Length: 542
Ligand SMILES: Nc1ncnc2c1ncn2[C@@H]1O[C@H](COP(=O)(O)OP(=O)(O)OP(=O)(O)O)[C@@H](O)[C@H]1O
Image (cartoon, protein in one colour):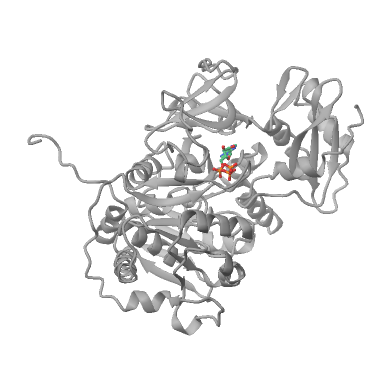
């Protein structure tokens, strides 16, 4: 209609086209599997993403085709993100940490036409090749000199494909609701299910990441994306970085404390993002070697609850602000961020951390509520807890190919499977996953609360809390913990420590120590495995 605004589709390609033109010199730095640190910039990424789109077109890839990637964070992966989605195909990022049979399942379920494979994952794909039904070819993400001897049929070399094209290509325009990427949940609570992101939802999500009260990503940032590009699209950081021309620093396969710290310091990293397990390791390295972060200003912790002790170490020990974030694959993933408000400026650091431990507030675009057993909305008083529901333009409306059937209620709310509270300022706090809550004598005990408190006990490096059946109380909590190396912390020490912070009925009935705890492909505690391992465990109080 004349006199109204233009109807330009919100497309992934517009992000890289923008940064290619306006932030052309800003660097993309990657650790590579071949060896040295690689440096490129947005101008080159845009050009090479176009060449890739040309090459894929020549291979017969069409609008809507799914193209897999099995790769670490790196510049070629970024080119694939933009090249594949930019041409109108769907970038399906495969999590290499899934069980091999799950990988075969999702590749077949997605009907991936081609798969981009990092050199490291060639053996993994070779072992699965007879089970992959739809794949026409494997594009190895390297140059001719590093091409492996492989038993895979239809092997193509990434650099050869890209360099054969001239890049004289205009990004096609299509409906902004066209799918751009596909991520499968990691199956903590069942089989992996596909979540299909749209061009429009991803661009809107990027705006949200770039707002100050989102993750505040800007051109002044140097971002270390530790969260993998195969996990909920690295929380959308590659897109958001392109939207504002932020420097991207990508660790490749080197995720140990020393490598991450070195990269942060060498590349002037100001913002980093990852799950608590990664930060636990990095902080351990930094403490052991008596180091400080010299450029990092803020770190995003999400995927699992950020323990208070971790927040304290970052904020008080290193002067690094923590942005606690909550989300799910189904929410693109950013749902809430724990930024402080103006009115919190004059609070003590302890009071400010009382807020930081909450999972945070929604940014514009996402609506959030909690409901009780009757489905009615509960008050935002920070006390009432219930099922957490979300709604918004970057929240899924159902799983790929209709798996699991209808997932929204009649008003469009998505039930997250998390249980939480919302306080009068809108800060949401996850109490638990609904499947992990411990139901004891008609009361609910949050396994996350008990875990967090147990982590504050000297000598405990990791703790998981699960429900054990109890003849009188239905269920009671059991702490399963990992000790610091050579530490003498005992069961009674942990219980004594918890007595100072938890109500009597919330105290665990027992504490057992293990060498290590099982984790999911995305670094979360694998409680299904713990429940299985401890299914015959008898509590001393039973
Ligand atoms: N900051 C956080 N604090 C506590 N829990 C969090 C936080 N961020 C994410 N989570 C948990 O992670 C869940 C989403 O994780 P994700 O989408 O990666 O799925 P998954 O656990 O890998 O797989 P599945 O959905 O199959 O269980 C959330 O529902 C929530 O339980």
